[in-house]
Length: 344
Image (tube, rainbow, N blue to C red; front, side, top):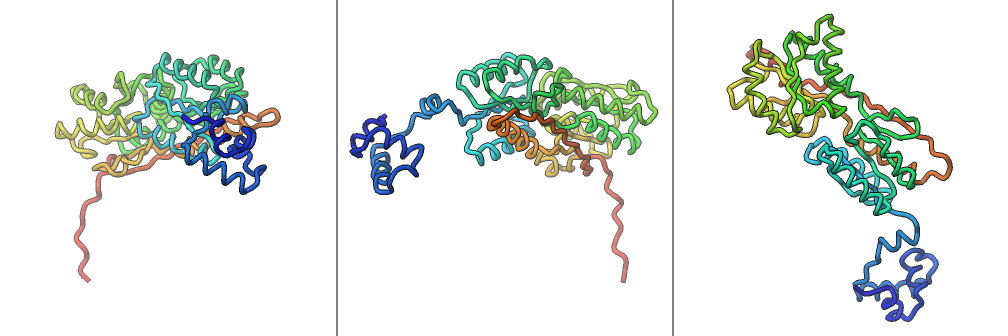
């Protein structure tokens, strides 16, 4: 790789002049700047970004650690983070923890080693004390899809208890009295709170949650796992008349499993998902789901992180809580009877 010294020698200028062309071009005359840029192009010179950041004591890298990058929910969130970061001149390093504390820890160590400016994280662990170590090293931290209990930590989250309430209340209003709750591990806060919201909706209706909501917990958050749990749901006595899935990805697997067994949605089984990802409205039947402002969630998290990174005085930490919305589609609503057009 050609060095900055070679560029200076070929252009007939000092190392400082080349540095100014790269970092403060307004300080160099136009003729000199054009000559140096021409040599840079001829040699194929690429600046050593790591060395530059070390000298400047400033990084333009942000970390983003999510639970499962294959989940379309996190794909849309990541786009919001990336767009906000890109607009501010930062690059985002995307990391997938797979809901593993060990894997998450390795990524955080890498982020610390690289002197990353800040990290947006959907944490695996409930105890967030380990994140304070990063902040002591001047690495800003913002919690994503996780409310902060600490006043000195920014967070962007969604009221998942309310989301669980909305989904279950909708099914109760349709007359369902045995509802299966399909979810990944309840050690994941989002799933636990959606379940709590579901049971809360039943209590608010004056009913016993133990009689109405029945858990079907699976080891992973993938569609193929929820597909495999359908057989057990259909064999249970009494059989549920509705299923509330803790994510649209799980609902996709359930829908496939029901279809393979000849169960019609919603005539034989009503189905509600969570997240309202892009494919939810494209399924047949279209999926009723709890909508989360995914892009805005990521965008807001990145903006909070950038504000903390650039704060010149004591930073005012902010906790943002978005409200979910029930989007009713065909998977819970029987189509009205078809009537022929009236004769004129």
